[in-house]
Amino acid sequence: MTIKNCLMAGVFLWLGALIPHVASAAQDGSVNKIDRIVAVVDQGVVTEKELNDRIEIVSAQLEKQGNQLPPRNVLEKQILERLINDRLQLQYAAQTGLRVDDDQLDKTIMRIAEQNKMGVPEFKEALAAEGIVYKKFREDIRNEILLARLREREVDNRVNVTESEVDNFLTTQSSRQDSSDEYEISHILIRAPEDGSPEDLKRLREKAEDALKKLQAGEDFGQVSARVSDAPNALEGGKLGWKTAAQVPALFLEALKPMQVGQLSGILRSPNGFHILKLTDRRGGNTSTMVQQTHTRHILIKTSEVLSETEAKRKIDGIKQLIDNGEDFGEAAKRYSNDGSAANGGDLGWVNPGDTVPQFEKAMNALQPGQISDAVRSPFGWHLIQVLERRNQDMTREAERMKARQEIRQRKADEAYQDWVRELRDRAYVELRLEDKY
Image 1 (cartoon, one colour):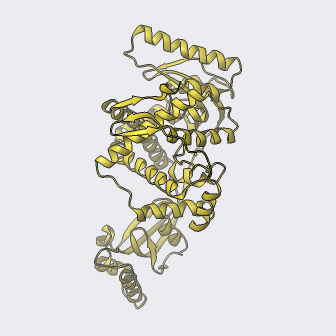
Image 2 (cartoon, one colour; image 1 turned 60 degrees about the vertical axis):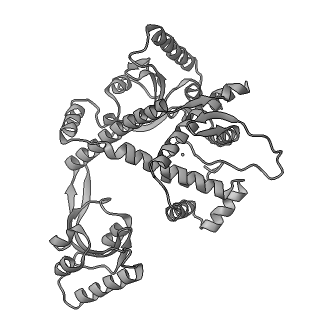
Image 3 (spheres, helix red, strand yellow; image 1 turned 135 degrees about the vertical axis):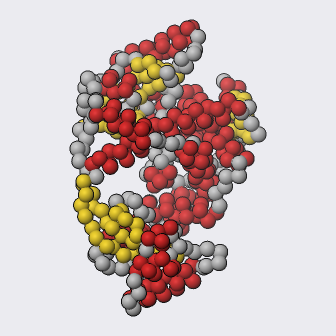
């Protein structure tokens, strides 16, 4: 998930995007062409230039990955669908008051530059060298953040996982053989709703059978995926990456278990449609999880409209001086800390790796039991941290439950997001004009 070469790798690692939303600028001196509308999307439009810019980026990605490009008309239709869905979501974000301010955007671009081992001025120069207009790049990143926040607000934050769901999940997984195995999978979906007419279902199944015949005859899986698949990752060759047995639907898992690496499944029918799987690789999973836990407590001073950064730092330094002169850390936390743990003397209990923000964890890990840090800045404010003790703990059961909860949540969130986007599309006025080109 690259400015036309590897420059953009940092963008997509941070954003987790499958296809970039970064448009390249026309080279100086190019012939100006009257733009035209290829889709009307409610109160907005998608222009031919937007579509061509995105096709250029996607084509460069596919070529870099060694994938042969699908026919131009197939690529256009796939990418136009994505542009329409993005446009609908951005319109909805604007209507509901979701914004990304310039300060947040600047911080994000700074992180992207750092991931590419550059400062922001160097990064701007690198963008210019690749023919990418910084102003357009900046707005595309703003849109990516908006899309991520919109999904989080409308879908992810509304997904709940109950303890009984986790229990049932683990019970089901424990009954499966090879439940610790992991599979690297590619996938083609021919969408076919259960309530479709017999004629439509017959036509769609024949489409799936034709795709399978082409694959069995040696045609590249990524090419077939790009041409016929209705899955969101069709243009990426249908690659799902590594999945544990627990992350794979039971229908898929039963097909994958007997397969050898490189083999294709038959046609699998689910409520969503017809599926074809390719097993790219497989490996065994881990059986136990040992982690080092830290018993820690802290004092937090938050910055606010009435407490500036300088004043907050001065206050935390003053508290540190009081503790160095003999005041009890816990009592100081009760009196001064702005954190919810203040009533417990700042005690956070046993902390696992990843439980705290990176700045806090780095400072905490540098301390020996009994030591107190100097002032530490995190996104929450200024901290004093004290490590009380450490231990190695077998967290296998807890890790299994946490992993199960995450997998259930991700699966439910993905399904809910696809449903939400379809509902958004169904409510919208969309007029396609791409066919006017042909």
